[in-house]
Image (cartoon, rainbow, N blue to C red; front, side):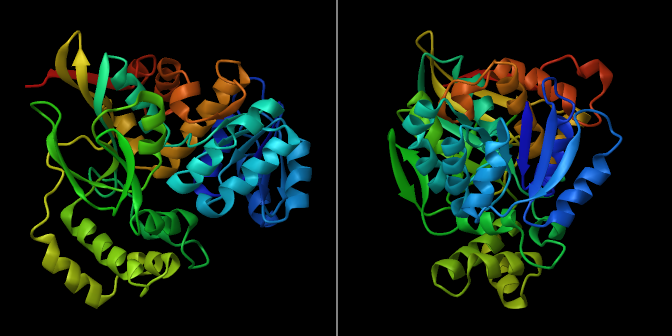
Length: 408
């Protein structure tokens, strides 16, 4: 099959292209970007690495004619063009119109809702679209699937990802600002999802609350601490898929100092003093006045303590008994490397989602979140095999540890 990698030269797209090139049934990868030289650069860097042949193509996703022309000539599109609250719906609509299967790494909750609403159109067109097949959402959704499979009834359901703990590089300048000094799409997205209102589940109902609210969790005797809400899509899709009757939210595992600075940015964005773009720039190069404001509030904030850096946790009942199920990535050297490199943590899952679509494991027409169409057991085995630096004696094993603890 021919694959169109939209936004392929970006950090996450480049990882997905590298892994996808080695998948069976991939006959060609077309690396597309609005900057032709960037697409050509990636093709040149990966030349000689083996796998499917590649070529570069200039495509601006805001040019509907050019976008549909590129899509019509391919079987599957990997869309890594963000931020998705600007471009996600545009690309998916074009893919449905051209009959092109679709996967993305959308981590904005608003367009996720809009894209899920295109399910009937996608089914009519015979198109399988998987929305949010990255790290969070993506890996987090499939960890949630692993957790809830142990429950008869789901009460609370949380997913979490790391920002600046355990060496995580979620706030490195090079990921916040692009080579041109402008804020990256990922950074602009981040500012969007720490401001305004975000979707969470409360008492079994989808509601909207301000972000960066604390959630204190005791998941097991070894894992407890406080994390903070952020506007990723997991509460929306997991609410649809598993119907938790209590609380559900996506959380950041974050230190008090970084959280305090994000909260200062949140207040200034909401007050109209900053845009998402200027806030992202300020995050990379913090201003003295905001640092002082953040320092004052950081003292009173709680930290993650012993919470794992990347997990899903579900509470409910199993055989009539209340339990908490924690599904977390195994703490091997390879998995730690994955957690600490957001490009790898996002790009590899996207390619592994593609692998299941190509071999027929997934592929049911419609618009799907990962947990309803990607087979989690196969995914986590594949993930262990593709993580950089994972030792050979771990490569054939599952990459997830599941802890089940009775709840009083």
